[in-house]
Structures are given as structure tokens and as C-alpha cells.
Length: 68
Image (cartoon, rainbow, N blue to C red; front, side, top):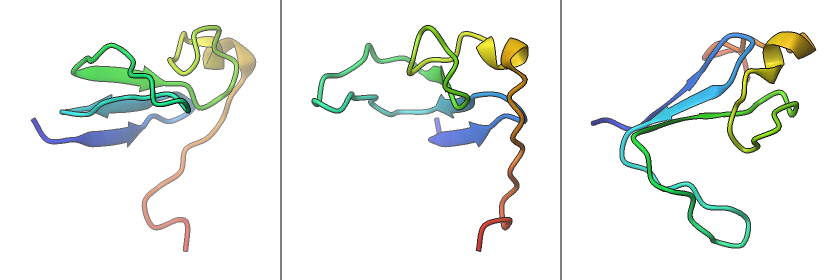
């Protein structure tokens, strides 16, 4: 499976493929084929998304090529 990070409109980062997620101290989170990472900062399960962006009114929909 190809590694991919997809930015969801007004939502999380969907990370798929063969990757390892580690915290700032180098501790590994359990390995999964796909995870959703919080972008809004409102999740109670950080770094994972718990859907809080929907209630919090988070808005962000960047597109490739927008940042120069």
C-alpha cells in the first residue's frame, strides 16, 4: 500500500500506508493501516481525531499549490 496523507476539508489528516506514529519522546503508538489525526486541536483523543471539529466549527480546506 502506498503511503498517503490526505487533508480532509474542515477535518482531520487521514494517514494510510506503511508508517509508524511516534510521540515527542520516541514512543510508538500501536501500528494501524490508517489513522485520522486531529488538525483542529479540539479532540479529546489527541493526536487522533474524535470528530470535535464538527461541533467546534473548524474550517480549513487547503489545496496543493496554495502555499508558495
